[in-house]
Image 1: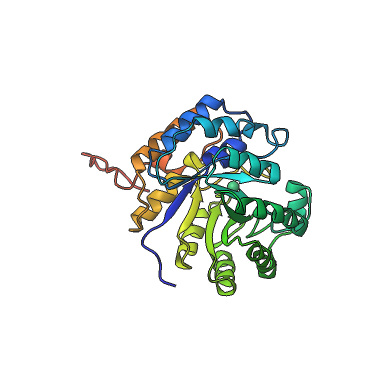
Image 2: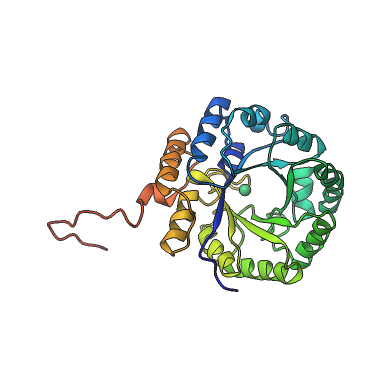
Length: 312
Ligand code: ZN
């Protein structure tokens, strides 16, 4: 497949990032950060999650956040929705797109949704039906798609089985998530091309965690397979519950910079992104992980030294 020269990047720090912080972020700060994010040029932002407040207290102010943030024209505000109650809240809050959460493996699903994958999927039937009578769009996801911390590699037959069910529900916008950073460029190629072959009309996106430093290589592998939609998180906010101190999502600034250096357009304002990422890094120094915040852009040239310095 021919590589695209343009990509669409969805910012997920307000959900994936804030959700994995040990402390709750004050609502006012969330609103301020989201409004800054909305000035960077993103066409889609994952702003929150309508999970039960007891399950994820960090997201308990979802309704309030949605009410207060700016709503620039043409920007899709997306939220995670686990069940019908969550969907009703998302509809009431005028969320544009609800993303359903589903794990590829039964053990991860039992851990996250308290149900095996296909049982969780059955719960989506009423959600899909309810969404049809509302303006909200629904997208699907497959967590641990490239490897599960309990079951290891996930066979492509599993992804196909899940996508078949999504298709029956009329959901063809699917996020493939490398939730714990177990993907590599070959597995991305295998799973993406396998699914494209079986469901060519689907729209796929990649949600890549940088737990093992593989996320950018995996994004490039996805791009080579024709993927143009990617998630990322400012300052790399968002951790891994199985590996304390491990990186979360690929940092938005790293992904944007990497693509732009390759001549792939993101239509985003990297300087604004860097300013917002810096702010997040200052506020959450232990939770951020970003190459660009350490090294700066390739285009930040340095004054040539007057004396010879040894480059090792
Ligand atoms: Zn994630």
